[in-house]
Every structure is written in structure tokens, then in C-alpha cells.
Image (cartoon, rainbow, N blue to C red):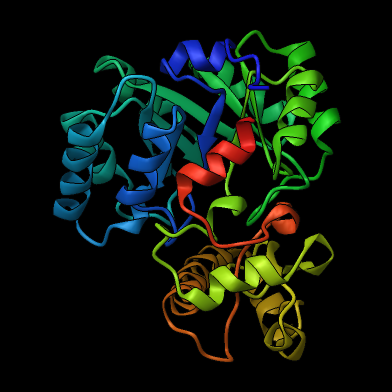
Length: 319
């Protein structure tokens, strides 16, 4: 039995099923999103997955060529000061065109203004009502409610509480992010009042993902109970698989990191340095199989039992 598919999200993006393949740093790529679109859902890639603006342009062109009826594609922008490429990335997205942009970690004001001028929809990551009201005032097309079951940087509220809170106070659609690994999970989120879901971790173990086989296999071998929070990657708590290496290095920030983080003047710099060191460490883990490996994932890997093509993963989610 296929899911009932008409929601505000399917209408907004003209897709068959109310699912966005979530943007994952160093994991998402053109091949994954192409297969997502071919399967009737939306796909999204972090702009930061591309080193240069030319590579970003090429990716947009490829996705436009691959786009089919019933699928759509977008990019994720980190809109705070730590991403020095943000404005030039936004410019490229607006020049080349895409269906939607998802903003994270900062004020989406400029992104919403520029994107709307060229007909691109903007969805904003939020973890609480305060920020959600802000993005609604700024004109966001939807709020992506990042709950406490999300992979990577997650929120503090349960899916149900966050969706309810936002729905009671917002008039824009709420898309739930976190805790979706199978069709029953999607039905649950839609039942709470979400207009769609953003699904990340189940797609790490896909044939199309460009990460190591070891990373993919870890998503198969480990489950929800093996997900822990670490402060060691970006300075902000982040969910990772509790491998022997993670157990060895620990999950708390070191005393020196704490001292530096408490110093107002240094804080901004430390954040930027941690951000780039963390990005590098994540990159090494994603691209190289060493025992020094930190693999980002969420508890929804519980339902990952094999490395499959994206279209098979979508099929499992919708039927």
C-alpha cells in the first residue's frame, strides 16, 4: 500500500511523495539526488560539498539535465559567518536556478530575498519555536523541524513536541527532520501534523553515496543504540556512530577547547577554527578508512540492513 501522497510539501515541490533526501556533508552528490528525483522525491546537496563555484555550477547543470517530472532538487546553504563562501554560493544558485534552498545555522533573510526574486523556494532549519517564528516573518516557505532524533547537529525536542509546537504557532508548512527510517516512521510524522519529512541517515548506505564502503557498512552493522553525541567534531554536539575510535577519543570537548570557547573575544575564532578542523576530520572519515574515523549518522540507521541503490531505499520508505 503506497502512502497518501498529497501534502503541502508535494504541492510546493511538485513531487510524488512528501520526502526530501536530506543534504549530508560529504555524502550527498548528483548521482544520489538524480535517483531520488527519479523515485518521485526531492533531493538536496550541501553547497559546501563543492570546493569551487565552478563545481557547484556543474552540479546544478547536471541536475537540471537529469530532472524528471515528479522530482525536484535543491541545495543547502550554511548562512552564518563561518561559511566564507556563503554569498558567492547563493549568487551561483540564483543565477543557475534550482527548486529550493535549505538554510542552516544563521539568519536566512538575505537568502530568502535573493532566492524569491528568482522563484526559488526557501526552507529553513529550525530547532525551536523562537527561531521558527523569525524565519516565518522573514518569508520562509516552510520550516524544517530538526528534532532530537536527527543525525548530525540535532534539536532538543521530540518529533511530536516540535511538530505540535510549530503547527500551533505557524502558518507555514512544517517538514520533520530526524527519526525516519521506514514507512511507519513517515506515517507517524505525518500523523503528528508534518507536511513531509527530511530523511538523511538511511541514504548513507546507498550504492550512489560517495563515502567509503566501511562507512556504509557501519550504518548496516550498528543501530540506534550505537549513536552517541560528540562535541569533538565542530564544537557543537553532533551525533556519530560509537565506534572503538570514538570510544577511545571520548565525546567531550577538551579543557583547552572549553577555555577558548568561554573567552568572548576568542570564541568566534575558535568556532571558525573548530569548524574547519571538524570539517577536515569529517572529510577524512568519509573519504578514508582509517581507525581514526568519526562517522556521522542518526538513530534511523536502525532500519538499514543492507547497502542498496537509492531507488530501493525510497521504495522501502513509501511502500
